[in-house]
Image 1: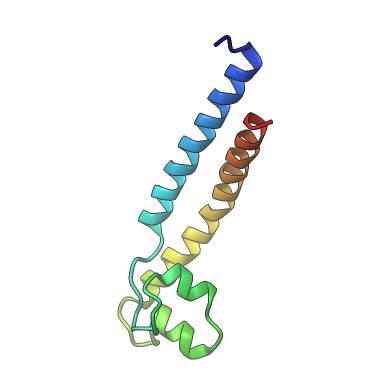
Image 2 (image 1 turned 30 degrees about the horizontal axis):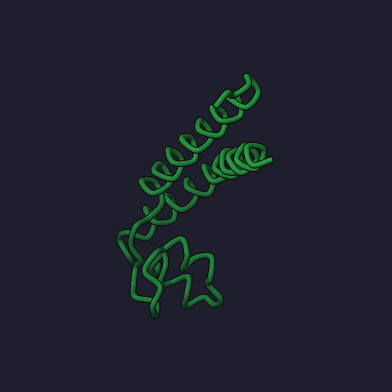
Amino acid sequence: MIVDARTRFLYRASLAAFAATLAYTFLLSRVLPNELASPLGTLRTPIIAFELARSRLDLLAVFGAGDDPGRNARIAAMLHGHELDAGYLVVYNLFLDRFNADSR
């Protein structure tokens, strides 16, 4: 099978974007908090619990009350994760765009 230069470039760009997406996913998993302050139904992941929070009690379960010693660390980790998430959107969209270009 003969592959032209453009196709080879698109495959490599797609692979690079995929690798960047995986690296960013790993980075975010290390930065975002990994446990809730208190149980919240069936939700186990703080980022999902935060995104689905509908009340003050839900947010307290994610971050903890004012006297919780881990509260500030969870808030700081969530803020830092959300700052990094902007970059994740870029690399993930680049991956989807390259992948889509490869399938045309």
